[in-house]
Image (cartoon, rainbow over all chains, first blue to last red; front, side, top):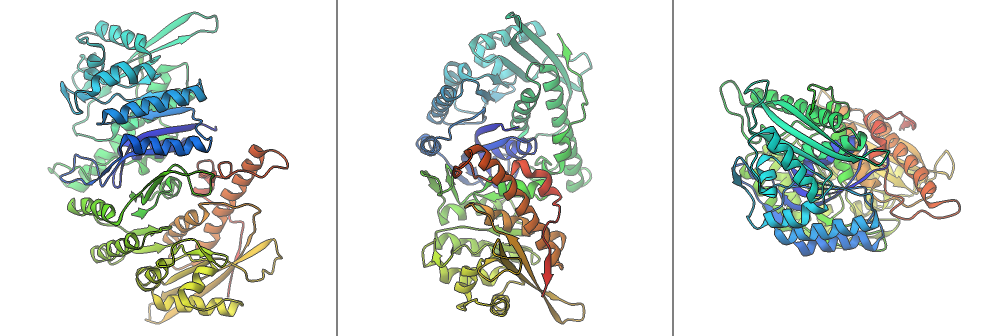
Length: 306
Length: 293
């Protein structure tokens, strides 16, 4: 496989978020990963302390210019995640559009990170940029329920609402939409959360078909950082390996997440000791230790085709 | 903790099971062997700030430090301060240092790095991977024979590191001129308190191409294999040089294929096929044998 990904995300010295979360798993799956580090921080911002440097939109542009001058601006995928800077985000869109002109088959996988559980954790002015510029250029997006609602201006109270929102998101651009988590009630009970996916594709006979799926995912009693980044990276990989089969791509992706998270929780509790809440440092994803699961994930849940 | 800008070297250690925290000393579009390169460098102050973040969270505990190419004396001095502090936190920490100064008789970093490496960096290092030119620069002694090389490695031991690998030299190979000679020396403390030195020689096939990044990969793999074989430099080097061989062969084949017959591959085409070499990195077939001197 000779597949090249440009990933524009944060770098942390220690831990697994952003590019640290995406690079290793994609590389062990055989993808060439070129990374642009939008920031370099000592660790993620959930620790007590964090320090480091951010990249400006101009500096991003300079790096891309280097790639372009050498005539190596040819990518199969672009992957982006958390950003706080509107001009940086706009520069990313320009780069994606240029890369798509160089390779019209390029797939842009975008995690439109805005917030969760009713609250934004990036500046408000990013919403119109994602809605009007980023999402229209994207091919695969992985919003949570809050982000899906923000981007479409519609609330989700039922599965029917969720499907309408995913169709609205399709009409904005992306052919593949995965709502990574929601408040919808799961038929398996309240120990589960519901994720949904929708993929539009053109059949061999030219007709359009949409596959919609629902997944019931076991809840975990811990706050993880970097799981969204891992999810987007693995969805990139598994939709690449199963391009017209969102059900399988999602089952593999969610299964990898499950193995990594489970291994991480076990380790964190062991290191923290009985009855003690693990620290952010202890809850860093056990990525390296999960290599075998990343390479070949045992499927642990089935997606339901709706 | 490694002070690197090569994502691939991070990856190779990770596939072998090491947790790698990396501080990127620069962020460039590509290496400087291409027609063009652009990007930003990290200052010594910025490096200090990053380390402060790690320290404030009380996670400044490492088993290894790995460093390579740098052009900045104050950055290098900051690295030494950090290594010394990390060694106070963990006295068993092993500092693997590639003292990048130049090759084939000429320096490719500013001259003023030479005394910093000689007087500050090498004395705190445990494993160093100089080429012949760098070994000569650091000790002030020329290498014309194997005997000279052994003396130079002993001088380097005296400066600090217990493990020295001269990664390439102009010494005449026994296997013919398609090969180059590398040497290694490791001082081990015996149970009875005496010191024993194991010296090895390994002849490596020459390649008809200029690679960038192989020195970085070598240092990373030597870290990994000396970790697995801490008192057996012969095996550690056989594994390390064998991995290099597999990666380089795969890269050359690919580069020639991409370039086409009769054409010299470009720097872009010669990028190491690291991701594709995962199986060789995890479990390298030994293709080179080291002789114990």
